[in-house]
Image 1 (tube, helix red, strand yellow):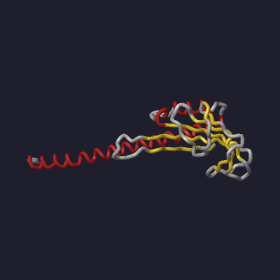
Image 2 (image 1 turned 180 degrees about the vertical axis):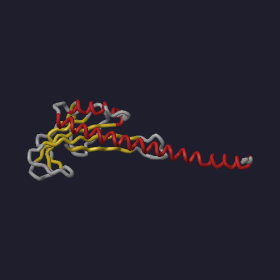
Image 3 (image 1 turned 90 degrees about the vertical axis):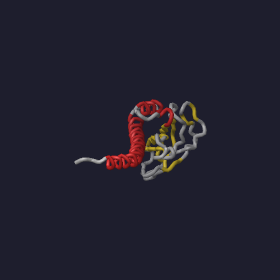
Image 4 (image 1 turned 45 degrees about the vertical axis):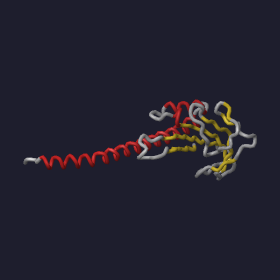
Length: 178
């Protein structure tokens, strides 16, 4: 079957009209895929951080540095932050807990904890907690008096590569209570 020159020209015009739209869709899918990957990485970082801080004698700064070193392809030193808060339950069957200690990773951007943001003085990444420990309400947990819980929060500012797909940055967040 012979394709006439006119039909070939029509096919070329159709292809030229459809190609930019297909490329835009592919780039948008690529950008959303990178955002989902970044979110999965910070979720895994907070979970692993909870495991490390609760089960080892390592300092919070060491744990946070170890977490950040495993965050590739994310650039945690520029766009990320980590906060570890140690809490002690106040009463049985309660979601109330006192803040015992709070550490903020010194290798990344300064972030504000969603668990407790009342630290007035930071010294080398460690919060100077008031002598009367602040009380916070933890989501979903029912604790026994004296139980110790660690809250590991990971923050990441995701900047899209293509602004037409996601016009603004996305502030990703993950919290693990362990």
